[in-house]
Image (cartoon, rainbow, N blue to C red; front, side, top):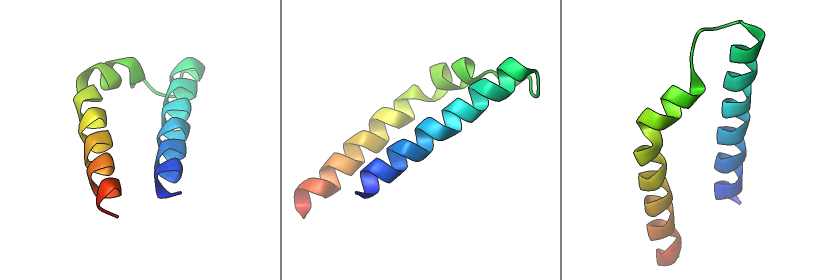
Length: 55
């Protein structure tokens, strides 16, 4: 259940970033952020799987 919440919050945050960029509210480029920080997503998924297997 917790993993679904985290996934949903990440998707919502990305959606907000893309929408703000498209509406001209910010110059922040979500695709550049994703291309820089994608390894962190892999690490988070790995840690989540590691702790889930211990339960």
